[in-house]
Image (cartoon, protein in one colour):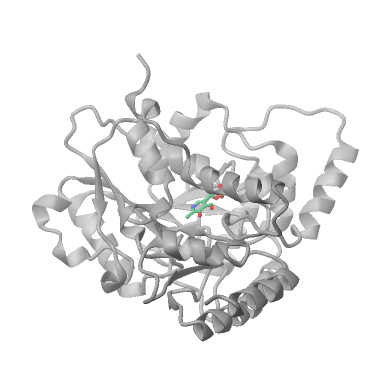
Length: 383
Ligand SMILES: Cc1ncc(COP(=O)(O)O)c(C=O)c1O
């Protein structure tokens, strides 16, 4: 009766790590918890003020539209035009989501997997939700191997035409969680051309796109002529609004958008109106995003230097707020975690993101500058 995937003995991997960190804190250890990508610096002030004002002014709370309000969609459309010079129309090409995670998870429900011929593809190291979603709907999956040799993105050239024919959804996440690696324009273009040729959809998970170091990484919204991508964006990271659950789905593929909207409407995922109001102020404001970028730049530089001094190898790490690390003297993820733990630093073993993450750890630095400085002092003591 019960979905066999849910009966497997496992827990959402990041929850397990978080619980371990909490346990150490409860035992009185002074732990620096770098396990979850949940920004600790201030939420965008404008969003907080807007929601307070909205709550004070409105005594009635009513159901939100499943697609998001006209004002929210308009703000997203203007943001896309301003930042990516792309013209996208509300509802037809854009609708709201409660953070990007639920939309990423629910997207697979839009398709028929019953004939078992089509597959959902994702990387062997990555955000666990793509697999959880595919396996919950019992869709056939393919994990594409990635490692340092492939630049932590799948090698598109080793896949044969007949293999591509089985791909229905291809998940890409650049800047990539957990490695912070990015793809270049040629890679993205090749992927979209393959999608065009073989009829699959590029599901582009882009929540870190605006947290870049010096140059904004390429993303789906840069490909104005293509209707093969569906983009999943979010205010969580760029505006430090994880608690608001505000995201958006964008695509020029009107057919896919129509069916995904239809799929979502009976689920009750309409984004609360007061949240959307806060979201409008955040999508409309670029200043705080530039400020957040600058803060991460500073933190990145500081921590990078401390890590390199202790002989760590940093793979990627230019964008987003993750470092993906290895060290020649400590070849397993467990050894690396214990090494950091010996200095009261909790990090995530690479294996949480897939077996190919063995040998690596992920270190999150969306923490305050003061804590970054404290962290660096502890890293210096790693031996
Ligand atoms: C790669 C990736 N995609 C999506 C999400 C979901 O973020 P949210 O639902 O807060 O938009 C996360 C959160 O950590 C993530 O790392």
